Image (cartoon, rainbow, N blue to C red; front, side):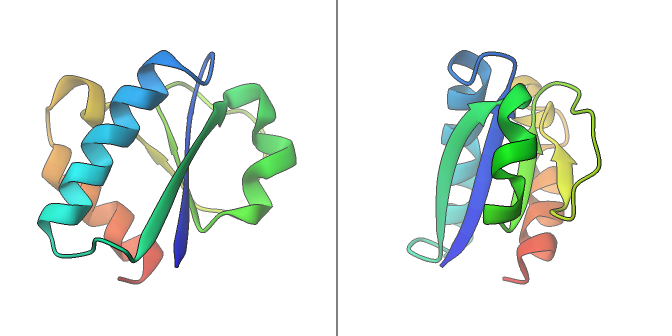
Length: 94
Protein backbone atom coordinates (compact mmCIF):
# COMPACT_ATOMS: atom_id res chain seq x y z
CA UNK A 1 0.00 0.00 0.00
CA UNK A 2 1.52 3.31 -1.12
CA UNK A 3 0.96 6.29 1.17
CA UNK A 4 0.19 9.75 -0.25
CA UNK A 5 0.14 12.93 1.83
CA UNK A 6 -1.76 15.93 0.44
CA UNK A 7 -0.83 19.23 2.09
CA UNK A 8 -2.28 22.73 1.93
CA UNK A 9 -2.19 25.84 4.08
CA UNK A 10 -4.84 24.71 6.57
CA UNK A 11 -5.03 20.97 5.86
CA UNK A 12 -8.75 21.21 5.15
CA UNK A 13 -10.13 22.95 2.08
CA UNK A 14 -7.79 22.72 -0.89
CA UNK A 15 -6.15 19.52 0.32
CA UNK A 16 -9.58 17.87 0.47
CA UNK A 17 -10.37 18.97 -3.07
CA UNK A 18 -6.97 17.84 -4.35
CA UNK A 19 -7.18 14.51 -2.50
CA UNK A 20 -10.60 13.71 -3.98
CA UNK A 21 -9.49 14.55 -7.53
CA UNK A 22 -6.26 12.58 -7.12
CA UNK A 23 -8.18 9.61 -5.76
CA UNK A 24 -10.49 9.69 -8.78
CA UNK A 25 -7.56 9.94 -11.16
CA UNK A 26 -5.74 7.00 -9.58
CA UNK A 27 -8.86 4.83 -9.41
CA UNK A 28 -9.65 5.55 -13.07
CA UNK A 29 -6.21 4.09 -13.84
CA UNK A 30 -7.12 0.84 -12.09
CA UNK A 31 -5.11 1.54 -8.94
CA UNK A 32 -7.92 1.31 -6.39
CA UNK A 33 -6.74 -0.41 -3.22
CA UNK A 34 -3.06 0.25 -3.95
CA UNK A 35 -2.82 3.60 -2.17
CA UNK A 36 -4.06 5.58 0.80
CA UNK A 37 -4.37 9.36 1.01
CA UNK A 38 -3.95 11.50 4.13
CA UNK A 39 -4.09 15.26 4.53
CA UNK A 40 -2.20 17.81 6.60
CA UNK A 41 -1.12 21.45 6.84
CA UNK A 42 2.08 22.42 5.04
CA UNK A 43 3.50 23.42 8.42
CA UNK A 44 3.23 19.76 9.53
CA UNK A 45 5.33 18.36 6.68
CA UNK A 46 8.60 18.33 8.59
CA UNK A 47 7.03 15.97 11.14
CA UNK A 48 5.05 13.76 8.74
CA UNK A 49 6.95 13.65 5.42
CA UNK A 50 9.11 10.61 6.17
CA UNK A 51 6.04 8.42 6.81
CA UNK A 52 4.79 8.81 3.22
CA UNK A 53 5.85 7.72 -0.26
CA UNK A 54 4.94 11.00 -1.98
CA UNK A 55 3.68 14.44 -0.97
CA UNK A 56 1.27 16.54 -3.03
CA UNK A 57 1.29 20.24 -2.11
CA UNK A 58 -1.28 22.78 -3.19
CA UNK A 59 0.85 25.59 -1.74
CA UNK A 60 4.58 26.18 -1.37
CA UNK A 61 6.43 23.84 0.95
CA UNK A 62 9.66 25.01 2.52
CA UNK A 63 12.27 22.66 3.86
CA UNK A 64 14.22 19.68 2.63
CA UNK A 65 12.54 16.29 2.57
CA UNK A 66 13.60 12.85 1.40
CA UNK A 67 10.01 12.19 0.29
CA UNK A 68 9.29 13.41 -3.27
CA UNK A 69 7.08 16.52 -3.40
CA UNK A 70 4.81 17.17 -6.38
CA UNK A 71 3.02 20.48 -6.94
CA UNK A 72 -0.71 19.75 -6.79
CA UNK A 73 -2.15 22.95 -8.25
CA UNK A 74 -3.44 20.92 -11.21
CA UNK A 75 -5.97 19.22 -8.91
CA UNK A 76 -7.45 22.62 -8.09
CA UNK A 77 -7.46 24.09 -11.60
CA UNK A 78 -7.92 20.96 -13.70
CA UNK A 79 -5.07 22.13 -15.96
CA UNK A 80 -2.59 19.32 -16.74
CA UNK A 81 -4.19 17.06 -14.13
CA UNK A 82 -3.36 13.91 -16.13
CA UNK A 83 0.29 14.95 -16.44
CA UNK A 84 0.49 15.60 -12.69
CA UNK A 85 -1.09 12.22 -11.99
CA UNK A 86 1.51 10.62 -14.28
CA UNK A 87 4.19 12.14 -12.01
CA UNK A 88 2.45 10.79 -8.91
CA UNK A 89 2.16 7.28 -10.37
CA UNK A 90 5.82 7.38 -11.39
CA UNK A 91 6.95 8.60 -7.95
CA UNK A 92 4.94 5.80 -6.31
CA UNK A 93 6.29 3.16 -8.69
CA UNK A 94 2.81 1.97 -9.63
